[in-house]
Length: 127
Image 1 (spheres, rainbow, N blue to C red):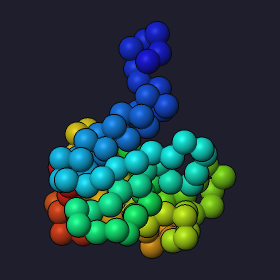
Image 2 (cartoon, rainbow, N blue to C red):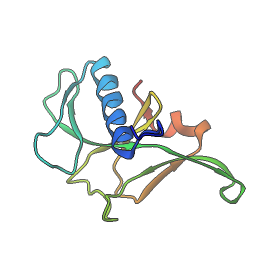
Image 3 (cartoon, rainbow, N blue to C red):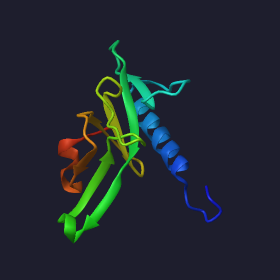
Image 4 (spheres, rainbow, N blue to C red):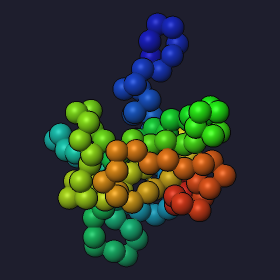
């Protein structure tokens, strides 16, 4: 944390990763983190399955303004260089807001927007 008590982006990112790990483990999934630098943050396997899924963890940004017709949850689907994550790199995004985690499929979009009242219909909550 910074001297002012605010969480830095690296602390926020790590909090989101740990929150996602806890949610997946609570569902009985096997979770791993890469040792080397990879485009994904985590991998998981569903109980009884052999397939490994690759996950990029993202913090949800809440946008609330009249110019956007109200409130939206936004998750970025792009890397720091601006390129989107491809389906070959990442199967899912874990979108985290506080202690809530949703999984959404990678559709190779720059951003994923959903209204808070529709989030449970469009994204799969895992907490």
